[in-house]
Structure formats: C-alpha cells, structure tokens
Length: 138
Image (cartoon, rainbow, N blue to C red; front, side):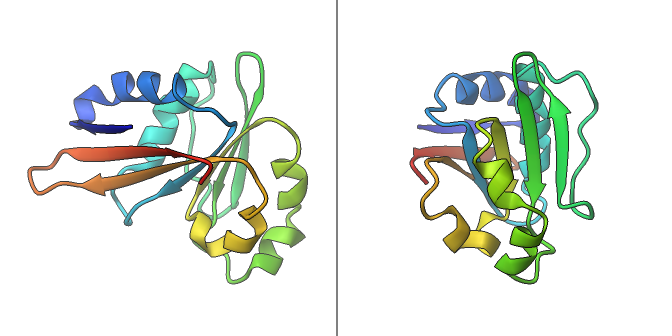
C-alpha cells in the first residue's frame, strides 16, 4: 500500500496504516527529518495512547500504555552495535507480543531477521508531501 500525503493529513494516514498492519512490530525507514516520529505519534494516538510521545533518541526505547496493549517505541539511530540493543533487552521487547515501533531498524538488522513485522518506508517528495509505503513481513 502506498499513500502520498501532506502533514495536515497525517491523522487519516495513521488510521489507514493501523487498519492495514498485519503484525504488531513495525519497522520505520526513511531519511533523517522525513517524519518517522511524527507519524509514530499519530499511530500511537490511533492505538489509544494518551501520553505525549517523545522521541526515544537518547533513551533508545520509550514505553506507553495504549488502549488494550502496550506500545514500545525504539529509536536505534544512536546504537553503535547490535550488542547494545541486546544489552537493553530488545529481545524481551520483541517477544512480548505488544506493539513495537522501531525507527532506524537497519542498525539492528540481524536481530529482526526472524521477527514477523511490517515495514513502513517514508519518503519526502519534492513538493513537500510525504509518501508512506507499507510492506508486510519486513
């Protein structure tokens, strides 16, 4: 599924994506500043999170209570190795059965190789819109 949108349409995009996710682990790809965290904030709202989401750039992972579930939001940008992800217990998070949104998943690629997931790739278009491409089993 591919959706091109402006930022003022992001709520509707989040709704569409949530309804097309086939897995609870979602990998977010895209250049710095393309809007991964902004989209994740809207997805969290759709899942019933009432807390204000913040980027876990420095904490690596933030945990939120959703309506009927937990949401783990990872930002793996600063990880220097997959061992660092293992040191914070990423395997426990991945196997917990809760929603897990991961930015910069390419930094922990082999740790995700056996995990069923969806992949969302975000691209910034020349006219300022974004394109989100949802792919199953990332």
